[in-house]
Length: 176
Image 1 (tube, rainbow, N blue to C red):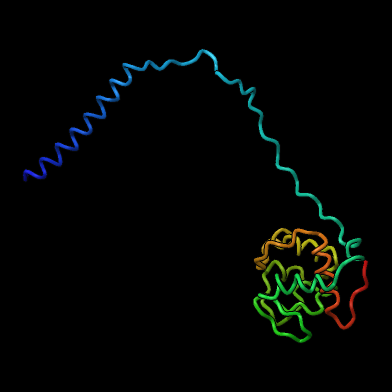
Image 2 (spheres, rainbow, N blue to C red):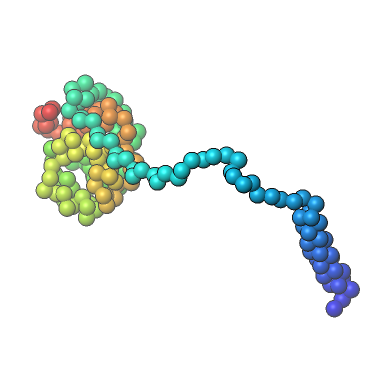
């Protein structure tokens, strides 16, 4: 072994012994003692309650009566345009074209590859409450959907979007 290696080994050994001795001396100087009873009483440990069920969605019908179609168009332009189109006869994008979606069946476009969860609902129509639930939280409304969108949390904003979607049809559905 070289002289430099011996110096390095001696330095590590000396540091280790120094720390060990400091710990022993510290334990002799400071006498830790346990309290007979805790300094702070915390009370009994209570089992946590079961998580609360998510709040039911407010019915969308009353909000549709005062919905702002222009605001719905603005929201869709901001939040939906990256993945959807909504012109009559328009192409699909990442998501399907949304023209004539209100009142139409889930998975309404034959030329779009929907998730199996959405295809399973093909026999059900997009009514106002189904759209409300889906726009609130798509993954909760249709577990297994491929739509990667957190949702629109404000009920009036959802009503505005649904009111705008309703206008995207040659014969719009009647309001509830």
